[in-house]
Amino acid sequence: MRVKCTVNGEKHEIDDVWEGESLLYALRERMGLPGSKNACEQGECGSCTVYLDQTPVCACLVAAGQAQDRDIVTVEGLAGEEKLHPVQQAFLEAGAVQCGFCTPGLLVATHDLLEREEQPSDPEIREALAGNLCRCTGYEKILDAVKLAASRKAEAAT
Amino acid sequence: MEFLRPATWAEALAAKAEHPDALPIAGGTDVMVELNFDVKRPPFLLDLTRVTELADWAPDGGMLRVGAGVTYSRLISELGDQLPGLAMASRTVGSPQIRNRGTVGGNLGSASPAGDAHPPLLADSEAGAVVEAHSVRGTRFIPISEFYVGVKRSALEPDELIAAYWLRPAAGPQQFSKIGTRNAMVISVTAFAIALHPASRRVGTGFGSAAPTPRRATEAEQFLSDELTASGRWESRAELDPAAVAQFGELVAAAASPIDDVRGTASYRRHALSVMAKRTLVWSWSDFRNARPAPNSRRTA
Ligand SMILES: Cc1cc2nc3c(=O)[nH]c(=O)nc-3n(C[C@H](O)[C@H](O)[C@H](O)COP(=O)(O)OP(=O)(O)OC[C@H]3O[C@@H](n4cnc5c(N)ncnc54)[C@H](O)[C@@H]3O)c2cc1C
Ligand code: FES
Ligand code: FES
Image (tube, chains in turn purple, brown):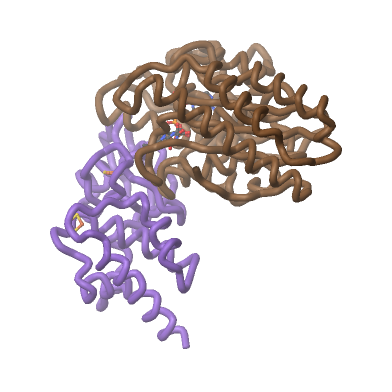
């Protein structure tokens, strides 16, 4: 089947999509957007987190056909032309990235958290990132990165 | 496989009538796992996410009619005050990403004994919630306790779809408690819900993961309702009698017929159920004593 959707502001039209295929597969294998990672294909790890109509979801649990006419933003859509997004920059600087497999999903989830909550508390951060697993960092640096990104955002706003 | 994409409810019902073997997909949080892991290969997928009617809720004649496609996230933010028990259960489902997509309609569709929406649906009002099922043949209102017919089997006919479920807005305290191996992203070892209905002097219960289907503990409900009425506690709001609390816990555990599996043993499940029943009773009774009309307290076991 054919699926049309908007990804990172660009219209995509993909053909020969298998009806049972996930949005994650379509993004990675048909649209040339391998940023969203495939680690579990069962909603457990969050490394495939993308925005679907402004809501963070696991792309592995969305059928590609359900993305028809929808607006998707992936990790590739977070950065500007020249600069990384402040959330990405903060992850780099805080050392929140080791193997990096969990990072795209964490970036989208953190981006969403900071859109809703400018200065999230530790429990709020933990709750917001509860659906994102990291096997490397032990999460402490990730919490640091979220707080760094939040304070950068607050500085930029003043 | 074919992907059916009805734009309206009428189209969805027509498609389901024409293809009774079509697998509906809402949030996809159960269906996609089965597709990704080759557990299911349905001839048709019937996407319900375009049907806007399913994503609405509204008060109707003293009840709330909630569309099958309302996500857990929306239920928590929009209906948390009116349906505190169901909202508490919803907060324990998966992760934010899962709650942004998953629906109570899908939880009902899967009819898993471990589904977290079931206990509060069973505990709601005197007879529990009601499932509104539609087909091209007409509408059926299925009482929730008749909806679950076996392990992952519901009373839905092959041509039927769930349109909505009906609940009474809470008129008394409600609680939900779930045992799992950690706080997030966990399928329950067992779960328990209680709702006090002071106006009708009844207590509602529901439990999950401790029988082939989600169930009410009807004897426990009857015992406690009678005991609270006989002792005049609905009026006096006096402290509970510890012996009655203990008896309630035992009757809840006795209503279960759990199995041993990887998540826990049958005897652990029985024990956990009695503990959760006693705790949630004490919590909700203390809410009642503090006389908040429709408290929305959050506690975890
Ligand atoms: C990582 C992860 C964690 C999870 N954690 C929990 C948890 O903590 N607690 C819990 O209870 N569940 C959990 N689940 C399971 C799942 O999220 C829930 O069962 C959810 O309610 C399913 O809703 P959905 O809209 O995604 O359903 P779908 O996957 O779209 O559908 C589920 C079933 O219902 C049927 N269906 C859907 N809508 C209708 C309708 N309107 N009429 C008729 N049939 C319909 C489908 O055909 C399918 O059989 C988890 C799942 C994942 C992947
Ligand atoms: S790949 Fe989607 S949640 Fe793990
Ligand atoms: S950095 Fe390796 S999984 Fe998180």
